[in-house]
Amino acid sequence: MVINYSESEVFFLLILITAIIAATGLYLGLLILFSRYLTLRDKKAFKELKNKYSELIFEAMHNEEKSIVLFERLNKNPKQVSIVSAICKDLLEEVEGDVEKKVKGVLRHPEIKKHYLSYLNSFNNRRKVKGLLYLKDIQTLPDHQEAEVFKLLEHRLHYLSHAGALVILASKKSHLHEKALIFSCQRSEDCRYTVVELLWEYWNNNFVSRESKEKCFQSLLGSESISLEMKALLVRIISTFNEHHFSIYFHEILKFILGSEQNSRNFSFVASLINALGKLRYVKAEKEVIQAFSIKSKEIRIAVIKALVQFKTDNAVYELVKIYKTSTEYLKKEISFIIEHDDELTRQIITSEAKVNLLKN
Amino acid sequence: MLAKKLEIKNPNKDLPCKFSIVLIDQNEMLLNLLDFELAERKGFSVTHSTNGVELLNSDEPQPDLIIMDLIMEGISGIEFIKELRSTKSFTHTKVIVLSEKLNDADIRQLESLKVDDIIQKPVNISELLFRVEKVRE
Image (tube, rainbow over all chains, first blue to last red; front, side, top):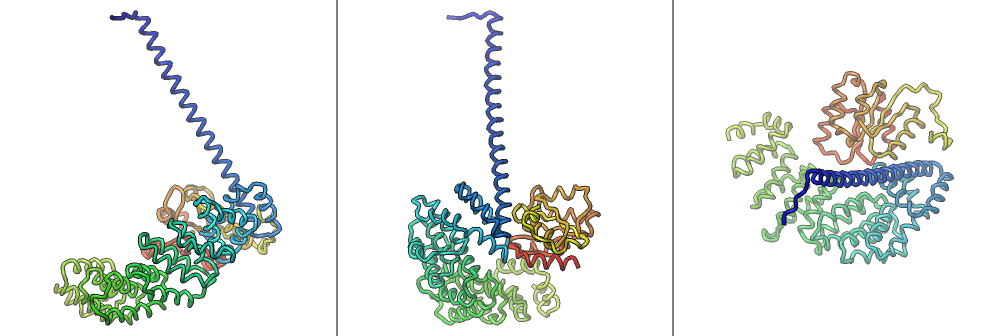
């Protein structure tokens, strides 16, 4: 059956469809505008609240009497504790010294402490982590929570165990530091990057003397329960602390390894030791570094080249030229690339006899 | 002013305050803190912003010193310094960079842009004040 519409009916239908589309569009547009207005209003209100708290924190930092205003306000609005702690955390990343102490002083206030300590007993793991990270920030591990936090290191969830380790390593509890580090190194084989954060946290712990930290690192590197791959990472991290004291210890380990049987060597570990010695410019290790080039490992050979480049002694330059002459194309490219980007080394080669040899090749 | 609320006396308030500083950082709280230390305690004329572009387009008299983070709104810190150095009116403006995790290449680049000092974050405020005094000399 065919329905025949008159022209006016078709026209009416078209207008109706257009009106429906326009009305829907208008409705959606208004809805979007309204939700954007609400978001902007919330954002503005939050910014104002944050500014107000910034001002109150600032006053509390400089005048203890004025801190009453801040904490009375928090007492009335406990949910806003997280705003204060977020502001303080941001600031802690930017400042150190006296201001850092003042900020931590604000964070340690009983009103804030009470809020976060209650998180530690929560069944919600996200909250628990927040509580732990709070303890890390204020570098406090209460005695009655020591055992509980230490037990977290064994937790099946890595992020909880990591947060627990952070709390211990930032605290004054020096008798737990080494144990926590060894434990974390053992269980972090699958996500080694987390160890970087732990080591830095410990290195920045101002309650612990540098000597104790050095002793702890030596124990870690000497521990049989930590894998050589993990030790290679430890050496890499420790060398970034730029403490020249460690070079002596790294040198001793390298000497020991080179004196041991060939098959007991771990290439990554040896390479990381050589890289660290080069980074710390420990020229006294030059002989062993050069000796290590005889080990047939690309990783070690590149580490040797990089270390020699750092040493920049006459002997190091001579050895570099020798390596260049006798090595494979790959190592030649590596040396050429380094020379191209190291003006000082280029100058040294130009002024040394080695230039003649290098140019000949 | 916050200092008025805190009733903190400015030891340098009677001194002529000629040295002007612009602070550029994204952390408002840090800006307030530095403002307080430099303006209220040291008596410098301090203004602050989270945006470097505003300063480049400003008609205000050029500051004597800019203390800035490399991360800012609208423009990268390095680009900002390049612009600054190529603008005649800022030729005499000194620059102190506050930044996290700078590698050797970054430091070399900043030195080539004739930055007067580089301070690694986290900042020790007493050290910063000392460096500002040094740059002033």
